[in-house]
Image (cartoon, rainbow, N blue to C red; front, side, top):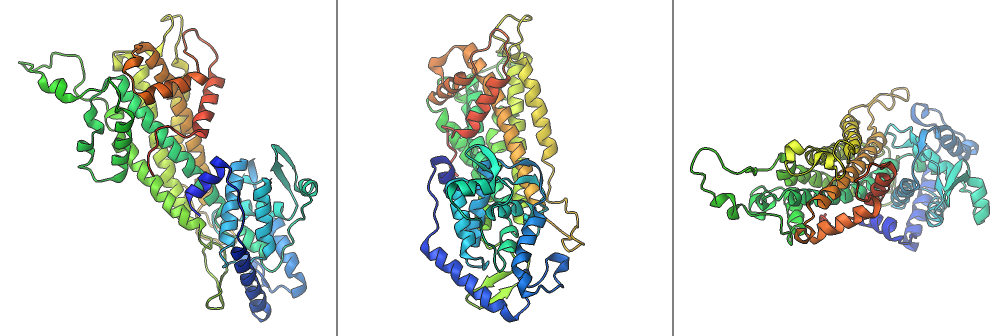
Amino acid sequence: MQLKDFEKFFDSGASFSVSDDTFALVEKSHQFLTDFSKDKIIYGINTGFGPMAQYKISKEDQEQLQYNLVRSHATGQGLKLDDEYVRAVMLCRINTLSLGHSGVSLGVIKQLESYIQNNICPVIPEHGSVGASGDLVQLAHLALGLIGEGKCSYKGDVRPVADVLKELNLEPLKLSLRDGLALINGTSCMSGIGMINLLHSTNLLSWTTLTGAIINELVEAYDDSFSKELNQVKKHRGQNQIAAAMRASLSDSKRIRKREDHLFKTDTGGDVIPNKEKVQEYYSFRCIPQVLGPIYDSIKNAKSILEEEISSANDNPIIDLEKQNVYHGGNFHGDYVAYEMDKLKIGITKLSMLCERQLNYLMNHQLNDRFPPFMNLGKLGLNFGVQGVQFTATSTTAENQTLSFPMSVHSIPNNNDNQDIVSMGSNAALMAKKVIDNSFQVLAIEAVAIAQAIDYIDEKEKLSANTLKFHKMIRNFVGTIKDDRFLAEEIAQLTNHLQGTKSFLQVDF
């Protein structure tokens, strides 16, 4: 399963079903484990869990053991994950359990398939996972929903799972062998959140590349900072992709200038350049490919790592049908995901810092020397323009800077020191989610200032088609600001639109 499959599922509502070949493989794996474990000690089937694995479980208690595990670990707290993320978690879990390395019963796969198809989303709290043995707590809440207990989100309402199953004439999952352990022991929560983070990050980067291009257009910048000639001598793919996207967006602009048509023809005749225009723009304008390029590369690398993770068997123990054996180890450990989510949130924080600095430039007439203070299109002194929104953008960016401290280095031993080094992968993914959400807010505020600037210069015939399209989109949510008014709800609507709508300037991943 790849990121494009998630995109297809969430953006176009693609159907989901499990193939007959997969069902056959799952059944073969389950039958092998059933037979193999009859006369052997296998962790999680006829033993306790974690530090209590030295206790043998009698045959008559083995089924109850699986239920005890699920119920005892469904202890999460905090806000519930949005349905989008829960559905991603279920997609990740069914994908890894369908590989034939987990020994689950067919009922597990069929129940997950049914919940995905019917959009039944068990309530999964945000807090609880330390990222090894995987996402035990969050996945226990998923498993709790599958066995018909706890609550779920269904058609916009949070209801007891048992009531929804009854309404749909569905049966709770019956756990057997090691179903409970297989369901809760893995990295599917952090990975599911991570995959949605990547979808939003690619879109956020595309929008930010567009606003970066527009910013250069508004100040009539020279084109060499995003030219092919300048950027190709630096070999990073991300930098060159961003520069290429900016060139594409500005190809029909009549405000972007060529240095050879202006400064290269100027003979100053002295030590001081006689014109007011800047020879080079501030870094937040001139270095956009170099700032956003590394973020592009980080997203692309994270995409590769997470696609590998969700297509891997990440529970314990692992069944090998070819060698007819069972192997115990630590595939549930989430450091691969944790590291990528830490890097992602650092990159997106830098993106929000870029947006905030561009916003500051537009707001500060002493810096830009071309726009009114705070993009005030009303009466100076009496009206405030968009002065107030800058405070929100600045404080939100500052929150991102604090949140970007890496979670993966915050391992705390627990579980009687059995789990003595853990990944904190779900925490890293959730914090990355928060940084991404915050950054869309900062971007939306910058977009409002950009729209004000476009209205002020009143040279729409010189602007690129993408810039005009972006301006029209903003004005669908936030009208021109002259007289002061309450803006919070308008900006929130614009933020939601940006996050939920693909940028019309696509950066190729």
